[in-house]
Image 1 (cartoon, rainbow, N blue to C red):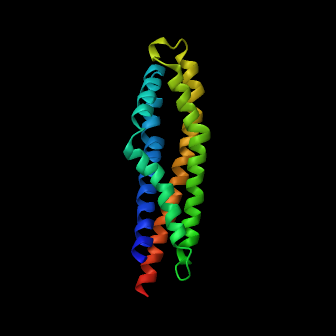
Image 2: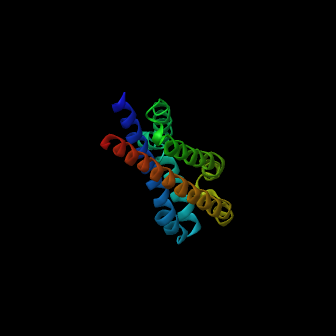
Image 3: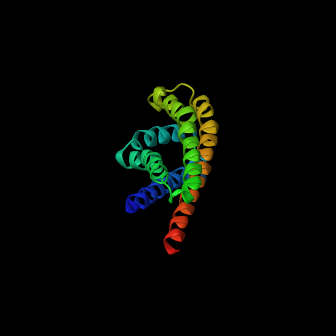
Length: 167
């Protein structure tokens, strides 16, 4: 059982870290780069990114972060293993913020771009970009900060397990 507890926490840390890295990369590189392009380029690039990101690797990271963190929390409920539980629960709460912002802000905006269709047939790309870009970037920054915080908390929980093992 001890191996499963540690393995679930490690998996939670890794998947949360990978999700945090994705959101952070969009916050500090991808969106600032696309922000320097014309309307057509930004809309087309985000349409293609939104189509291609829905794959197994993303599902493992994005969904795995939630599932492994839930599993780690459940496995640390038993007596003698609760010392790191507050860190895991705090990470879970932050990751729930990520999921909420994704569901309420980013996915609906991604859907707006998808529903716009072929960029060469959009009559007002500037208006479409204006509706999308600022709100999507703000939402993503929240996701980047929250998931990075969750990653740090889970890493600290791993440190706690290491300390417990050393005593």
